[in-house]
Structures are given as C-alpha cells and as structure tokens.
Length: 262
Image (cartoon, rainbow, N blue to C red; front, side):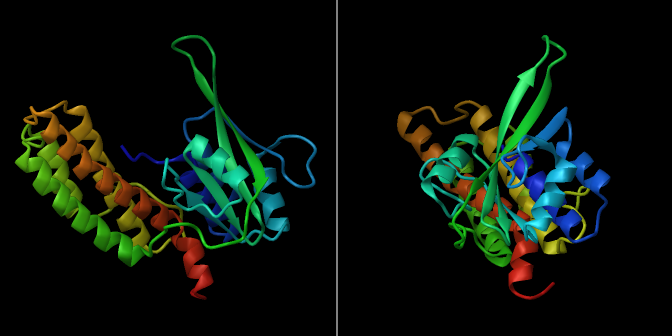
C-alpha cells in the first residue's frame, strides 16, 4: 500500500515553510507525525545532528528554495539523479528528499526503541551530496492523472477476470480509487500546493490501497500458477504508476517554481 512516506511529509511541509505559508512549529509537527523525534545529520556548517527547525533554516541559508521527493524501488530509480552513492542509500531506504537550489539530498534512517508495547520511533535524516540533474522518470501532474486512470482500468479488468476482486472490499476499493476526486477532509499536502496535486496524491494513495488489498486477499479465484502470475503482472505496473503519480504530486511545488508560476 502506498502510505504517506516520511520524505513526502518533509518535502511538502518543508516547502510550505520555505514559502512562508506555515510556521516552523506547524511544519515540524506535521513532518514528525507519530514519530518521537527527527534529527538531521551531516548539514554543511553543523558539526553534529540538529533538530528540524534549525536544519530547515540552515537549508534555506544554503540556497534551498524547494524540496523534491524520490521513491525508488529495485530497477526503478524514481526521482533520483545520482550520484551512485546517494542513489544506493535512497534505494535502501526506499525514499529520499532532493533539495532544489543546492546540490544536497536527505535520506532517512529509522530507529525503533523502547519496550514492547511502548516502542517509539526516531528518525535521522542523513544529508549527502547529489547531482544537479532532472529527476528520473517523474511525470507531470497531468500525465500522472491520466496514467493512473488508465492503469487502474486495465488492472481492474484483469483482476476481475481472475476473480481476485470478487470478495467485495477489493472491488469497492477499485471503484473508490477510480472515482476519487474529492479531498478526504484532511490536508494531504501542505498549504501552497495546487488543488490538482492534492487530487493526484489522493488518487495515487487509493490506487495503492487497491494493490495492497489485492495482494493481501490471497489467491482469490486465481487457482493456477499462470493466473497468479497474471495477477502479479497486472499489479506491478499499476503500483509503479501510483508511485510515479505520488512523486509527481509531492514535487508539484518545485515544478511550478521551475515553470515560473511562483
């Protein structure tokens, strides 16, 4: 399932802060979410790890005017631009944030601590040099929205034929994903993002829910290995399309800056 990645929260609310649309306290609260604490290590000019408020201010002083998201997977360096060392770290974490205006990127490392039943999560963002180049395989918002609709139609047809969606909840998720065009009553992105980015991100997350439910639903009516392979082949491209759309939505703020909209 495509949930809200930590890199998405950092980029979205960091962009809101850089634009002066949210306060430092509100931005940090949204970025940390349910985690206990976030720290940033390796910032130029800082000898040790610092808190998010200081880190975002330092990035601004270094020339950063926006933040992008990367959600790479094996064989798909989505949103990355190199060098190989940074790409490898981002691939291991399955996410990263790329700075716009300075050749820096941030990769999260997640730690769990505490006794069973009272575990808390701490995150350290490692700052590393990146190559200033266009991010890999990130579509425009319009392309992402069209691709999501088409991929979902194709996948739903295949899954229905294999009876994977026949149990009810999966079919309902598919219908909800295809028709999703309204906000869910919460801010899925920080202030300053265009409404279309909110729409695309919500749809991408709902498509991710469809993929997750289809996998978790067991074999469904797919009783042969050939049918099971067909299900996997139907799900992989739609999951890839949903990840691309998710990155396009998070990166819409920077894309507008590049086009001179802001």
